[in-house]
Length: 575
Image (cartoon, rainbow, N blue to C red):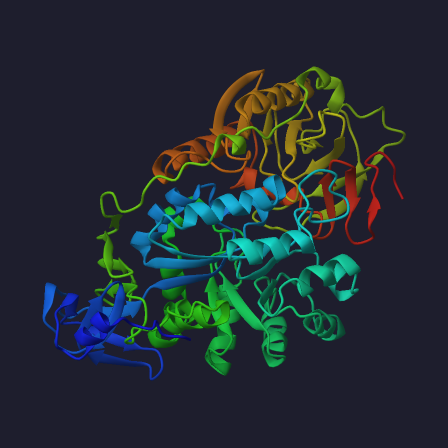
């Protein structure tokens, strides 16, 4: 941690010789260093805390009986997962007490490369928020992605040097790191002493030793208590993830209770907008932790002080003189719902709403709005037609409710079997030439099609259609609709759009605010269920089907890929 070197004017306030800008009185101030609640006031000058105790001030704010904590910090977030642009994201999470995030914008990197992260960094400077932005290390999540922008060691160095990136992120392919492949090692070396954040689900034993020896310092994707314990024993930072589908916080909290809070922090990685609106953000992590027997004091340190330490947010995480005045005022330590939130000494939110004119609009430039370059004239029903089966046995991707794990399954094929859906993915910059085709069970479409341009890793266009008479034609119609929209999500039945979500920014982010976007997202999920899917979050599953670094069988623009064996899996051939 490092304190702000104050001016002479600030020091005169600290000595009690001049009035503060603001004095917050009557509350109990949390000291992370001693885990105490101190009944004292806080004097604020020029956005920083300059003293404790009673001070004259131009404005006195009485929070009598409340608890005052440092602003909450999201230890690792992929902001694009909310589908909100940066200003709408800030407007959504500020009232929940989050005043800073460590963002790994690897989806923006996938679509735009360095330019996208440059634009994000520029927009961040205009907002009442602290953004630590990592240089995402790879737009292509695997060697099977045929489209997407490149972000190698040279691009990482540029982002760190010219745009203040705080380290290297986006390390989604742990195998390349463990095997010491040259490109992976070069990306880590480009950090030059800054943090390297990782993603290593299931990596243990000697593989973990290699992963750590390469220079990776954290993991957000532990799958079990035992895995998290080994990683902590070896000095790795572990982020307790509380996402929408992927969340390890419940399984990992026993590690907190038994071994303490060293090297632990909360993360909202892959937390969708609907979950944030319904349950909250880092405040929800606090509730979950306390409800599971963690002390409020330990939970607050994991929500503020620890992530500030890891990410080098030197002036955050404490309410001490010399630290930035990011304050959360809590009426109680049960629901952790702030009554007021201050960022850099300014009241930015009250009673669950941001203050008027607090968050300025920061629209993206026009070049971020035209990214779907698929030639409509080359796409039709024939693009999604498999040749006649050479036997009754087929290989398919099998999915299950709310699981990110997908399996390769061999089963009999029968014409008209609607338990199987047709699946295709198109490279967004391939002009329609690269179309990967597969089959999937578990989505359950009885008719129609659903399609989306949110499809990691290279954010291609993915479409799933029913194995019914009109399924293929609806797939072609859905693809054409998305191309004309410039990206988003769509539900189609009998060549009619039942619902759509416009995501014009790179095909992955909306230009709407949270309330308006949430209405569109909920309508799309409802429409998908009306044509037969039983999945709670069908579009989330489409996104997962493309992530060709996770076992077992995934779809890419090169076709179905067995990620474990690193081979193509022809859906019409049995082993």
